Length: 235
Image 1: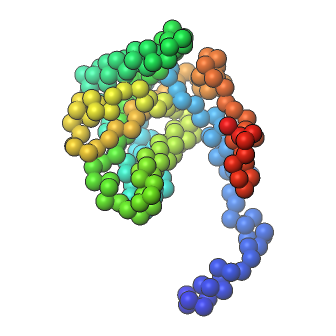
Image 2: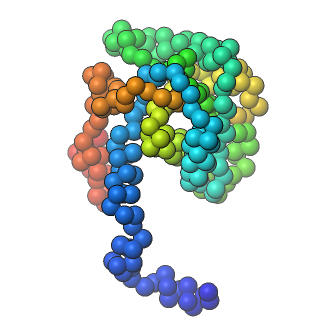
Image 3: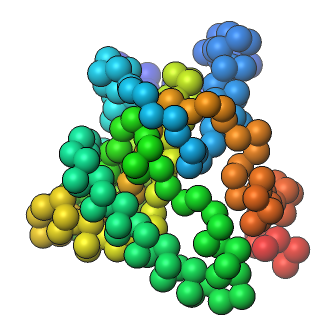
């Protein structure tokens, strides 16, 4: 392709018919949107197992996430040791108490919530970012937090793929990342981003658990949507 052809191609208007031909079938689109709308941050698991081929499919889906500068800042640690799971559970419990104390008047209400499934889930994965991320300047010079955003895309891919496979997943962020890094012998500069509980569930929540438990509610989209400028009506 010549520079002239590229210039001509990029400046031409999009054809509606071309866009339509690129779309998934109606059934495929419905499946994608179903996975998005029925994904839940699960806390209740029923043991069981995740077959190795299924787990590999899920991790491949995560690994196909977009990342700024294609830095791929995700590393997954599969925690199989019961002893390590107990250690992770203890770290979460410590932070759960500290979080409750920080919530003040909602302390007792918070302590009634189930915040993790580390000891019940078939699989526990820790997602962490590797050391040396500062070397990736592309897309991060003014927004260095894009390494976290990129790793979060990998988690979302894994979440949606798990829902499509009929498996529940919960993202736990209630822990001291330094303590977790020490427990899992992470190198200096690595940063734990989440403990992912994954496995069979008896049922998916009919709505997000925190909404189901009356902790909070999903805000309407119109409250989040602005045009051209930030408006005072949006929160």
